[in-house]
Length: 405
Image (cartoon, rainbow, N blue to C red; front, top):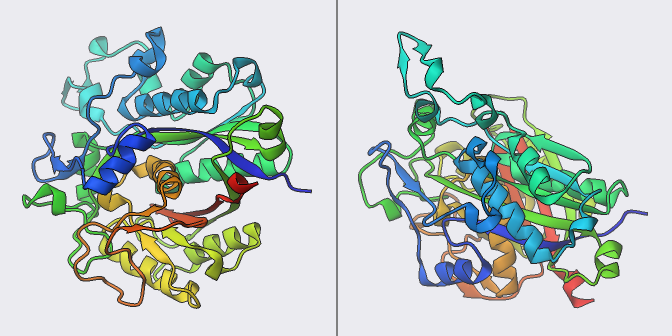
């Protein structure tokens, strides 16, 4: 019989804040950190303010091998474990699942390149650790004493949500009692911004930065790059009850798929993105009308938004489910977006709050119930969906029923 899987700890490092109080306050007061990029003045970014890794970890030798995104990830993981109140001896056999993206800060890491050759004498001896995707896992293991099953996923924008989904599956199927899962990323450097500009997917302009990110709006002009991380402690319900843990929410469904269509464009009919959502609903033994809230991928790009809006409209027919787009609040966090959006959704669920989609003046699909205004309203079940470069699709369904037991 499948095990029920609950969330007992959350740690977040986001442009909206570092804890539940800061995040909900930012949402209710409209505080954002969008600004013109210093690395590339043509781009708008959404950075994190006043972050210091040492505040989360203390000093340790190997932090020099962390890039910006992995630093956020380590901090969020430590925060999640602290939030869960886990004794270190319980972590020995815990699993560790991480969503990670590439380090594109090439100019900063290799600042002296002439005629195609790097000046290797000026590069750190173990410079490759800043580029290996599993460095985050190694550091977290060293700091926490986690020694169980470990996996690092690189499925583009679906990475961290899929890492959480994989951890959920391992606990549900009885292979683990306890896991730490999430991801972190930062794509605000010049290398990353240039890569997105070459792909013609990022917003470029010198208007008001706060108005640049426009998911599902007819005048959307590309995504805005953000940064951050979030991690979660997942446990079987029996394990959580046995140690007297507070259950924040329950993961009840997970689905994933791959388009096999194009490298940077989603399937035009959203066929396999739809399949990921259907698989999550089947796993949760739920019907579409039972979903109260959808946290859409909502990047603000021309292709993604209209395909996703049409998919939502066609799949959620009998009930016009509320649809939010959290990238309008903090930008696109790349590999970390799913984990961070999950942390924000949990904050909203705990506060009975549905945030509006910022800058949505003229919706690209009038039949979808986009959240145009904030609402103080309870919701019991929500769906998060992420769709990444390469056709990577992921969906997770979360319920708060366990908190009522």
